[in-house]
Length: 227
Image (cartoon, rainbow, N blue to C red):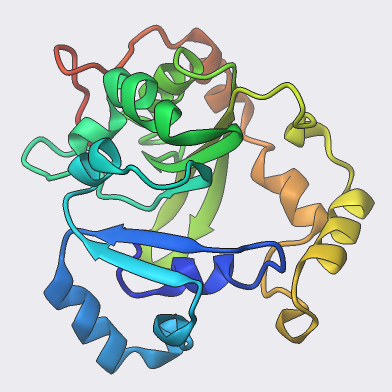
């Protein structure tokens, strides 16, 4: 996903990024966005660290034979019944494909559906529980996206015990990390900072309770769809 280039734009702000490999299913949409929305991609297509593949993400990941990924960002379609991306939410994908393509300390983050008080039950809790059963660590969080009209859920996952507990990072340590890791010309960031980090992971009590109590796991035999 991320065909408009904005996801790659943000990733390439980080000094330590050596290479970005993006996969999007719609080549025509990507080319239109590149031409008509240049402010969204901000020149990433000309960045020598950027590489794009026009392919179904499930097949792309299964067939990938290059270096393992330190970070996998799944900016993908919602798990809708007729959609092209529902298999990317299955436990089978996380365990047999995604984890196999990640480096030892690799991190995966995926969009996880709407998570407002009226709709978190549709797929957000199930996606989180699936990830919780596929990775040693899975942290749910939410971002307000005005165009969507409700908070949107995500999950940050990894297996390595070397990573600190991101939920408990204090604001100053996050600000210090940002200052050290982001290119100076890209600072300050528009939204993310230490206090924002803490807010991302501070979900309402009713949603935290639902996440803790969720038992459903998404598999090819037991899919859950966003309605």
